[in-house]
Image (cartoon, rainbow, N blue to C red; front, side):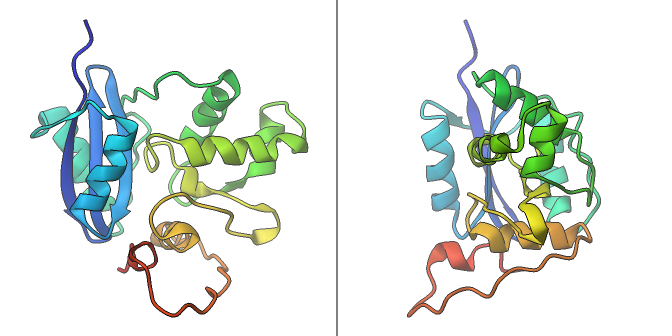
Length: 194
């Protein structure tokens, strides 16, 4: 019988992170959010039966690495065991390829599709895989951008601005369009203010 998934909440320079794991590896990661409550709620949508717990040493090592990443330390997450759950075969291939992207290395949705032997029409499917990524940062979906120098979408709190800040941490210059004027800032817009 599989162990019940567990999770841990912690703070980084960019906000509150929720990290979930099971006996096979890291199973969920909520990138920095404005509050611990929001991070926890998002993680529990992915792992609804997870129990809050102090992390065992291997998971604490991942927590420490994430904290160091968000202060700009060059971190390689590629050897961390993950349990991505059941995935479509194409998504599995996308995640494996993207996991090989190193610090500051970017590619485009279309380039990922082409590398996997699919046509450019699969770029949208690559984008859907990135949006569904259960362990962002460990599978570095922020390193996959749109064609023509566009940042592309990002489903983490703060959207494409958070993606841009993560890339900037890694030394990648990005051009992000100015946000549209709004009457007030939402929590999602204030996430990743570092």
